[in-house]
Length: 168
Image (cartoon, rainbow, N blue to C red):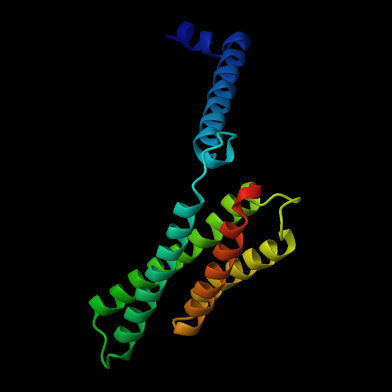
């Protein structure tokens, strides 16, 4: 039995195990990085601007509904455990959709679609900034003013962007 354990203590065996561990962790790292990379950030050239705007608009509608249901449920006098759970779920839903707007705005429009030589570049960048800040404000509030402003900024950006989309 000592002879079996002696094999495991040899320098060659320890070195081999270190190599296997290193290879394993390298594989895990590369697989994770590959699987986390966004499809739209590779140079595939597949874009659907109209679809992206519909998604942004749908996120706003979802945020509006979530905020309304949070307000309605919060107005209830005595909240049950189930009511508290629903408040958490609607809040999480509202924040998830606001984050989707932030991520899609940054990853799709800022990172890929708006070029520095585009017509109305400064206006587009400013509107995208307003959209990102507006989405953040919808996380912080359940009032309709936040979603109204966000919806307005998306509409203005959509008009400016699609009105000049031939330059893309």
